[in-house]
Length: 542
Ligand code: BES
Ligand code: MN
Ligand code: ZN
Image (cartoon, rainbow, N blue to C red; front, side, top):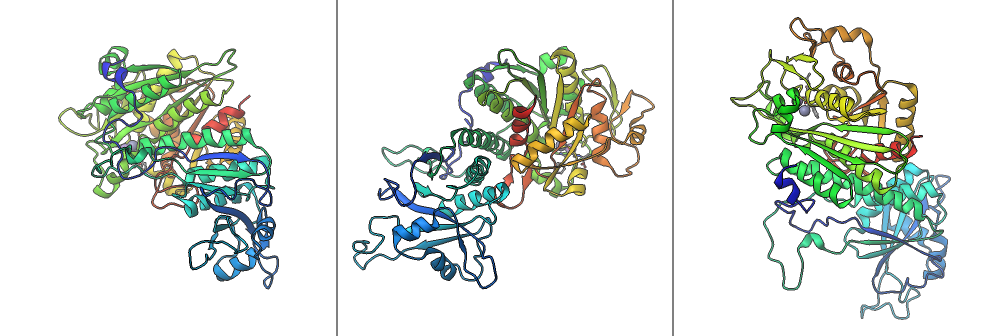
């Protein structure tokens, strides 16, 4: 481990985000009772009350009251659904993700004295939940975060009659959408007695209804994992070089009591990481390989999660066109997902041993660049003929997979990577391309995806295409000579060469790792896709 890594203590130490983005998740707590008898609904700190509505049954009907709406109507002495119908106009139909905020009038002195809602929160949020499926509740939760952003304390009855999984989806949607991208603005002078803006108190959401502690905790751990991936992937690449990511991993793993190992360029050279070193050779910031281990007592299986950690992808000598390069600070999202998954596994007490392996490098170009035509010796000894230096992800993964196979004794290999533009051309931004060596692994990932709402599409490992990876001068060619399509498949077939026939899952997240606009629980920029998915998969793995 380097001395710099050992000193790191803060998750985001350099260039702290400035400008009010809270780095803390909102707090979600439970309270007994209903809107009719909730003891602290009259506290001044409660800024809004949230109740649920559903779409009309027939065209001419009004909105249907759902959890809390009938009680609120009784306690406030006004017909809320009717008020929402009027204030929301024709566009508010109670669909999941729609919100109508009703601000009740005060008297001309500004008080609500003698009004029927005296002392109660004067803002009522009517939250559309559609037919109340988990997916709809996740969207409703996300919409609530948008509607109540910045409000100190909000009381919600909207999930009072939801199932356990529905409550989790709602809270997860709320926490995910509450994220704000770190801003690196000009430092604002801290007012005396006040901490920096990012330490501002987090919002608090109080849920009325049956206690769902386990679900709340699951949502909190999952959202924390996603926030971490977003923070790391949204950090600009002039801040997050490989050493910086290694420091973050070291600090976070240390705080969680997990074992960390960081290999620097000297150790990497001594141990034969020929591909990782070649990819990072032209960068002023040399590569690192980070290993974070969570090992519970009597661990059943050992899952190794490898994540692509390219802190910036210029394409190297096979340089990217200028527009294509712009989003490439997120090319380490896979490594961030692997890190978040092992931290989350530890926090939620997963029964299996989980090791995250993070090959970190910057794919730059310069006098030390690796070149098309070069032959590299990977960790496993397999040699690779380079065809295009922009296909760097599979190279760093090859070394990391080879290392995992040779030194970590895994029962299952998982890799996650923003690997190919082809995956997002084929599937768009909504789905990751999923490759796996058995139907059980496919259904395991699909089941986890159904819980978290992070969509996957099962892709074939087409054996015929493997011939495209034959080389005249090395054991393997790393991209096909002729582009015949199927770019995400040939990339997967290349990686498979380094898995030693072990059970293996490959997730190509080039599409869903980033978003150009916020939508429901997915936020603009780095989305954190995959962290909740892998965490859920690890929790449910027998
Ligand atoms: N990081 C890119 C893949 C990528 C592209 C991620 C767009 C997110 C959005 C990867 O390193 C890459 O450049 N892949 C090449 C592979 C090709 C040279 C075989 C690609 O997809 O063009
Ligand atoms: Mn590339
Ligand atoms: Zn890349």
